[in-house]
Amino acid sequence: MCGRFSLISSAAALEAFFAIAELERHHPRYNIAPTQPIMMVIAGDNSALPHGRNMADRRSLLVRWGLLPSWVKDPRDFPLIINARSETVLDKASFRGPMRHFRALVPASGFYEWQREGRSRPQAYWVRPRDGGLVAFAGLMDSLLAPDGSEIDSGAILTTKANEVISYIHHRMPVVIQPDDFDRWLDCKTQEPRHVADLMKPADPDFFEAIPVSDRVNKVANMGPDLQEAVEIAPEASAESDTDSDDDQMSLF
Image (cartoon, helix red, strand yellow):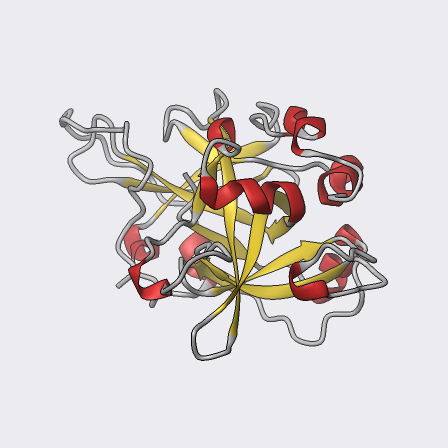
C-alpha cells in the first residue's frame, strides 16, 4: 500500500516535470499522511472535470487524501479510502466513476513502507527513485457536494503488486506513471479505462531504491529531512507477522 509519502522537490522542478502552470504556493513536505491535502495534476481543457471545471492547461490542485465518492451522503459515515487496488478498481462502486472520468497524477519524491515479516518491530524504509528525482503515482479524484453546500475534492492513490525490489518489504506498491504516458493516463475524453489498463503495473525493478530509516517517520508530527536519513538495521529474532492486510499504515499520531 501507500500510507505515507513525501514531496520535497522545488516548485520549478514540479512545473517542468509535469508541464503545469506556475505554482502559487509550494513547500517541501517530508511526511504526508492520510486526510492531509495532497497535490494532484489533472488534464488541461477537460470539460469532464468535477462540476464543469474548464482548464486550458494541465494544472495542479490540492485535494484531501482519502477518496469521497460524489454519491456519498454523509462523509462522516464513509471509510477512509487512501488507496485503490488497480486489479479491482473497475469492480468497486467507489472507483468506477473516477477511473473513467477523473484520473490524475500524484507528484511525489518517494514513499515510506514498513517491513513487518520476521521482525518484532516494523522497520521503516524510504523508497525513492534511484535518480533522486520526481515520480508520478497514478491517482483518482472525485468531488463531493456536502450537505452544508461546501465542495470537497478528494483522491486516492492506485496500488499494484510490488516488484522484486519492494516485495521483501511489502507486497504492494503505488502504480507509477512514466512521463511519456502522462497524456494518455490523464485523457479521460478519448482513453477509456481499458485503454490505460496496461499502465497499471509494477515499476521496473531498477526504478526505486529502498533506504532503511528511523521509526521517527511513524509519527506524522515529525516532518523534518532527518526522516529520510539512512540508518543501520540491527538484526533481531524472527517474529510472526501478517502481511496480507492492505491497511497497515503506521500511526498518524
